[in-house]
Image (cartoon, rainbow over all chains, first blue to last red):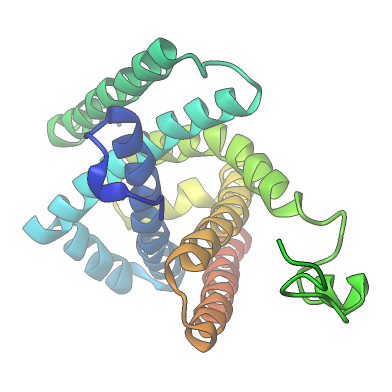
Length: 123
Length: 133
């Protein structure tokens, strides 16, 4: 934990840093659903229907929308981190520009994905 | 400063001081593997989102047939391997940063490793079953 966290003014960059961790942990927990889906698919129609039933329930849909955004956020911000790793984008204006791009893109991708789900598209 | 020995004047040898803190030359290994799995996951995540969307409204038979296809089965196995490896490395750092009780930290680290290996093995085994039957 950074020292003197209490005296920091809110900044986009630190929020994205915290969210990168939080979404990473959430996605790690989300692998349980991946396992459940694959194992049920290997087991048979009944168990697959049970896992699907959970996914299609209101609770399941809320969780999956959260996971979808987490996935897109972690993906976009992860690419931002990889660009930093090769030395690109450290200037403060650029760090903010890429930060807002990540926020916008992750929300748009989540909306687009769920628009496909609810309209039955991309099938 | 008064003379004499500094406060923690060491009667320890340099070797004694570094022992248990990891081998030299392996310090960047965690960093490197986390980046390599991240790079691998960029195309794999895009693929799995596309796959999930195409299968979203299909029934059991169709979903199973999709994973029976060798290309999808292979990509799924690669995704499982990369995702659990990347998750373990990431959660490890979170635990290192926030869990300061030694026994609890050790226990969590080992537990996370076990869970990731079990999850990966179970998921890969499921894919292999689907692919070969």
